[in-house]
Length: 185
Image (tube, rainbow, N blue to C red):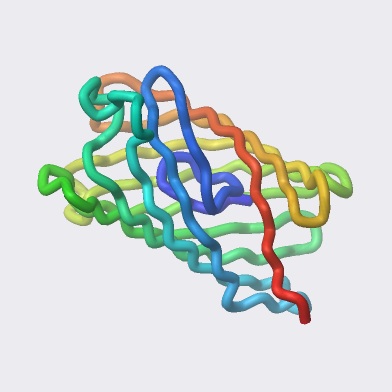
C-alpha cells in the first residue's frame, strides 16, 4: 500500500480512473529490486504511463491533459512491529504536450494490518513543479486493501486536496485490482 502513481497513491502499480472530472488511465509495472524480510525493508521502482481514455472526449472537455505522462516513482517501505511506513518520490514527465511542466511528487504513509487479509493506510502526498511555483497540490488519502487470493488484491481509496493552486478543492476516489506476478524460485 501507499504507492505513488500520480493522483491517488494507495496500493496501485496500474489503474484506470473514470468519473465526472477524470477520464484517464494508467498502466505500469512494479519492479521490487530490494526485499529483505529480516529487516522489513523493500525498495521498488515502477514506471507508468498515463493517458486519456480513448472515446471519452476528455481532452476536448478539458477533463484531462492532452498527450501522455511518463511517471517514474521510487517506493521505499519499512515494516515495523505494529505498522508499515512508506515513502515515495517520483517524476511526472509530460509527453506530446509542451504546455505542461515536469513535476515531482513526494509522499509519506503509515499502514497497518487490520485482519490477516485486510490492511488500511493513511497518506500525505505533495506535488509541484520543480521551481515550487506552479502545479502545487497537497492531498490526504485513506485506503484499504484486501487480499482475495495469493496473487489478487482488491483496493479502494479516497482522498481530498488540502492545498491546491486551483481555486476549489478536489475529492479523489479510486478502486482497482492488483495482479501479482511472482517468479518461481
